Amino acid sequence: MPTDEKILGFTNSWYKKGLVAGIAYPLPSGKEILVFTYEHLLCSKIEAFWSRGVGDTLGSKDMEDVVNLLAFSSKADDLIKTDESILAHLAKEFRQLLDKQNYLDDISGFFLPDKKSQGKVKEVNELMSRIIVMGQK
Image (cartoon, rainbow, N blue to C red; front, side):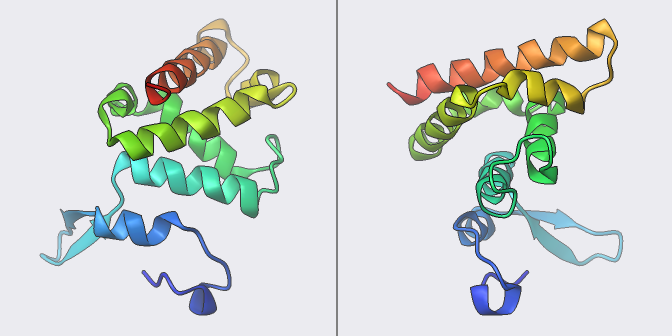
């Protein structure tokens, strides 16, 4: 994947970091590709939300990805064990998101309307709040 802004037409400060920390993933052909770690993918999606998504919670595919990564990944709880600089960055970003007016109401639109699915909004909020506390230590 190219990381040069001139090639991509845009930039994301997490692309290079994500590739450096990338994990080799074997393809059926025998070739390997580098994939972002969970935390690098999350950071890159948050940055994309603020840049190309212009902070529009409801209209941003990147925010939908962020919410899905937090709500459905088996690695979400491991975020509190991540590198301190990444944890501090996520804490700052999550604080900014939770401070957005109607953020939790907005993200409820990414889930089905049933009670169980809407319960994911609370889970996402709790996870983000835990990261904020851990990232400020």
